[in-house]
Length: 72
Image (tube, helix red, strand yellow):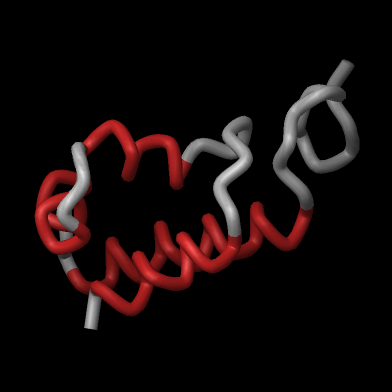
């Protein structure tokens, strides 16, 4: 059953994680950086970047912060 944040119960994401994911998404759009370009900058597969942006995936905040920094 979805919570008020739109996450199903049992997922590992938390509201601060969702906010960080939104910041990452907005920063990517503002910088004109694609998922594949960010993945290249981070040295990871594109699917890891897709997971970072997925509200249902429990990405850790330091990893999202690393991705945001890679955009600069």
